[in-house]
Image (tube, rainbow, N blue to C red):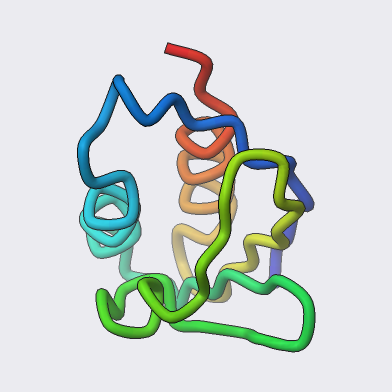
Length: 85
């Protein structure tokens, strides 16, 4: 299992629906991908689950993945969540 803690830095103007984009990105990987914040640990491929997570800019989240492409999945999602575009 690979994991990484990141501080969310998404610009709302860059993406109207950042959670939907995050789910799409997570779904590109075979690995099981989870996003954790506080006491919640959610499947990053579940749109309903991710919407319930309710993270915002400045939130600290842990991205973890387990599977054949876990390293790539974690790095890709971390890069997206830390985006300053």
